[in-house]
Length: 283
Image (cartoon, rainbow, N blue to C red; front, side):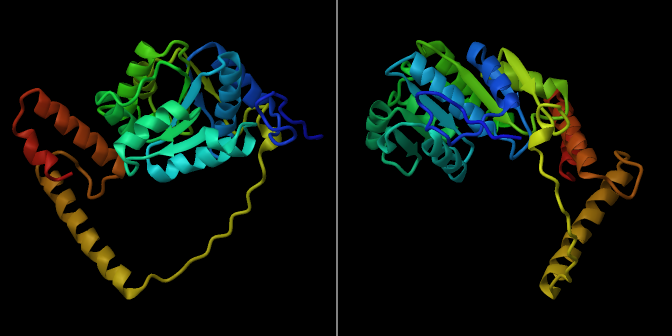
């Protein structure tokens, strides 16, 4: 298959491979706030880069904000955006909590593409150091974190309320195993549509490389075995306590079962059942 490249004034020529499934998802993202669900290593970031090029070109003078959950994770899109976007290196900036607040305030005004953790962005929004008015695109990497009290929902709401030309793109490889979780993510980010691709979709298959798996078995060091023994002992005691209390019937419980129990206990506590504190202490 002959390799073709993305053509756009803001993307460096002959650098980014054009893939049909990415362009299809880009088309959806250009029209709506989108949650993009794509397996790891299939180019979620490339979709964000193409959308950034589209938005910056459509809205001259606007900016792009890319958020990732941790400082190391902000470096990955930072490097890829610089690799493909046909813009001066000085337009790109990683902003972290280690950057002095007064410097962050200046950088937000000077740079066209800002890469940061949502915690830093939330803090600066709360303190009036950042205005999202001129940002034409907000990218939330690892968007499955957009639940509970995490900073993503706060920033997304502020963005939608303040940006002149808002567009949100959420990226994730694992949105969650239930419709409820996906709906919560969409609600918290103001998402209008969801695009999903798997390794089995016809427009993705040509880009999947065969994997060769070789299992290598190693003997654990004695120190590891001692630690494992201690952890196993704690696990058995807690499982035994759960069995005696009637919460489970088997001598083994999977991580999924324990997490479900934990969720049930917390729900029961919120409903006023103080006895559930005892069960919660075991998980």
